[in-house]
Length: 138
Image 1 (cartoon, rainbow, N blue to C red):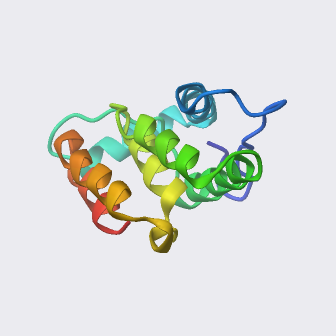
Image 2 (cartoon, rainbow, N blue to C red; image 1 turned 30 degrees about the vertical axis):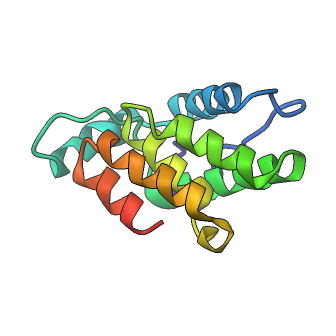
């Protein structure tokens, strides 16, 4: 994560990886490398139980993941994007699950019964109130 006022990290690749798993791995790397250890320790203050955080500020994370979404949709389709989000929501790090939500944010009109059934299955993966808040706003 950049200090406040700097640009977000970029979702860059020389061509989109071939599978949702590989794209999710690239996004996880981006999140890990762009985080702030100082902010990550501060994030813990909000949670009763211990959480894992890369230390991203929400606005920077949203901006970065929207760039990733734009790139994914330029090279793949909506179903591929949903599968990337699903891979990210398996993560144990706060920003990974939030990234999965942000990939799909404001795209609910494109979702059908299959996607909503998938999101319902995500309920079992919730590990904190932050995961819950993101999922119910999808």
